[in-house]
Length: 369
Image (cartoon, rainbow, N blue to C red; front, side, top):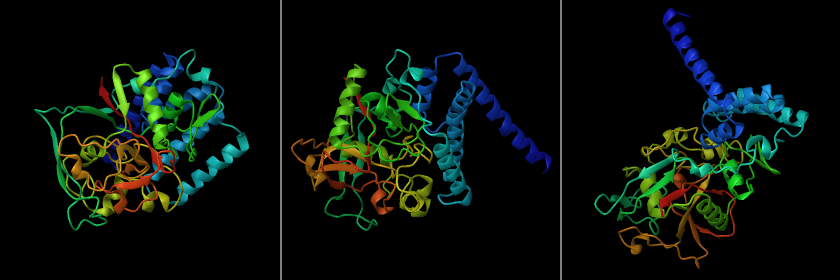
């Protein structure tokens, strides 16, 4: 190894070591619940997880510490390829560890939050602000151009939209630990990396909640309203979702139209569903221009709209179609088993019953009351 390469690697090591040391110093000077809330609201920060593993090992939880370190390494290998021999070996080790050690998620609620109720959405730094108004509207062309691969001409006719009402949209999908902390439930099927427990509920703070119905989402948002006075929480309308996703683009995806680049931004069939059934870690891939993660793929996102074929008929300004009597609800973004065409920015998925959720998840939009 030449001196230049050695110095480069040494610098990377020192940055990692000192950042982890600073995090450890901050953690050990506060209650565990404060640090855990940081992990839940920053699901892609491996340094937080590794410091947490160190803390658990020092507090007689070696099995949980090893599981978390394995999960961090597995998440890193997801980025190198979905089906590598090393990844398969790491997943085998995790399965064996859980089988050998029994329940590795058996923390009590009091261990994390002694006498407190965790409020994950009181933290504002994970929301992207869209400061829109009548003087500063969000203007864009909704729908897809003729000739776009996968386009449905009956539902994706292009039409101009103006958004004049400000909102904030969560940078990340709602993860399982957030949903469980607010509702006391975790309906998710995929809890492969779970090391979190609230009461009797096991949840994975690194993966999105899924298997959530539209009506489950309404209850979740209503609970957030009570927990955070001054804010109204809901799902985005189709227009808000597409505006935030496109980020000024008019291409198939928010980064362009080259499907070969989709694995850099989305969990979909080729890098997820083809090899494993279930959701993937949040925030691990590249965000869009607005700083939003997983807008393509991973889990379908409920919107607040009911189905209408001609979206342009809703009007140009702030279009919405709540229509609570309509049992055909709209989802956006595609999921881990979707084709590239279904993950497009303009794709509109219909016929989801409000009481049924399988591959659907949530993303929080909030507005000031």
